[in-house]
Length: 235
Image 1 (tube, helix red, strand yellow):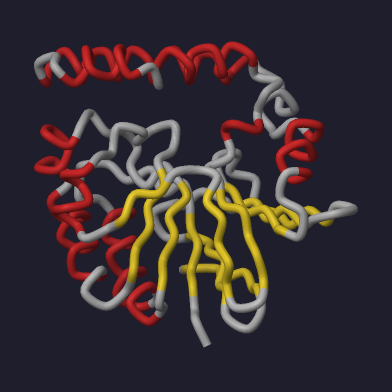
Image 2: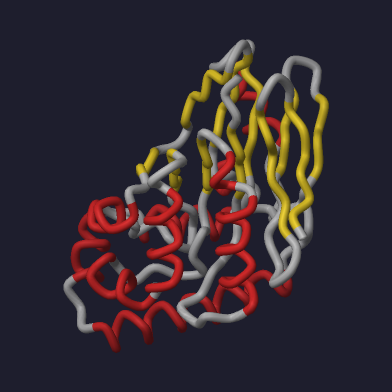
């Protein structure tokens, strides 16, 4: 029976802190025993481009490289690490996947996304996302010196934190109408996503929505798919 683990929103940094050590332990104790691992975005807290960030995350890169010797690892870009590219794949053995990703697991079907595309009430965020995902903007950014990229990323993050401080909880959550519209295109599928950091199972009329939570330095969560679906608390 095929076994898959699904996680999201670890927000790992280039400092070998407790959270990085905790993730490496997860890879050894849990992920290595699964057939597949899916990471649904924001594995990294920021990613300045493969040419800069691969060398800055040596421990994590090495851990993923070791893991992919035994386990297939699929990585979806999130809103923090959307500049992950082919060199990351080559260095780690991971496979980058686009959203929405259709996963047929044994007899069930799941739709995997990061989740920010469903937060359509947050109009300013969606406008900024459209700009940042523009290929021309990305090309210019990736050709800037490292120190300029660091400065720009820091400024964007600061503004994001400030903006979140006055946004309502509802605005930063998924829009139900947007979610229903997406799932109407995938009848028979269940939805799994992260981004909102609000771990919960939502049972809707035509589908179930599973929301992955974020990780701390000593606690995480995952969905395990085998003959059924179950939540795992990692600690």
